[in-house]
Image (cartoon, rainbow, N blue to C red):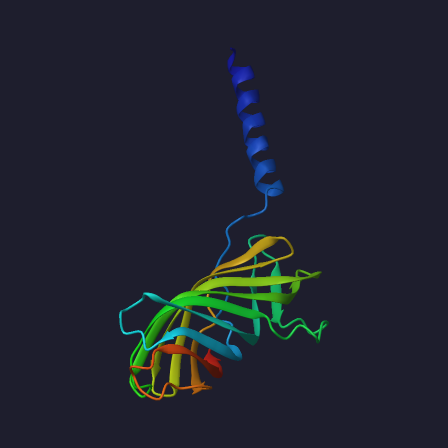
Length: 203
C-alpha cells in the first residue's frame, strides 16, 4: 500500500469515528436527585411478634406523592410525577413486600427490609409525554414505638420505555405507625395491620 493510500485510509477512519461520535447519543444513565414527597397506606405483618430476625413476611399497599427530575442518558431533562395528575383516580400506586423482625410489646423496636414499586407516573422526557413512570427499589426501616424511620436505595426510575435514572432514592422518610389491631398478650401470636404515613426528607 502506498503512502498516499495509507493517508486516505487514516482520513476515512477519522471521519468514521467522528460520525459515530455525533450520531451515537450518550447512553450513561445517572441518578437523579432524591425524590422527596410523602407516603401513606396500610402495612400487614403476617406474624406478630416475630423476634426471630428476618424470617417473617409482610406487605404494604398505599400511595406516594412525589416528583423526580433529572437528566436522562441522552442528555434530555425529564420529570416524573407520582401519581399521574392527568389520572386522578390512580391513587394507590405503591406496593412493597419485606421480611421483618418485630419485638413484643409493640413499644419495643422492629426492623424490616424489602423491595417496593411505585407505578403510574406522569413522564415528561424532553417534551415526550408518557404515563408509565415506574420506580423499583429497595428499602429498610426501623420502628421505635409508634414512629418509623424509612430509607430507600438502589432505585431504578423508568418511563417512556427506557431507564431514566439509576440508584434513585426517595430520601429518608419519617412517619407514624398506628396499629389497627394489637395482641392482648405477647403469647397471642397473630397477624396485625397498621396504618402508616409520613414524609421523605430530600437528601
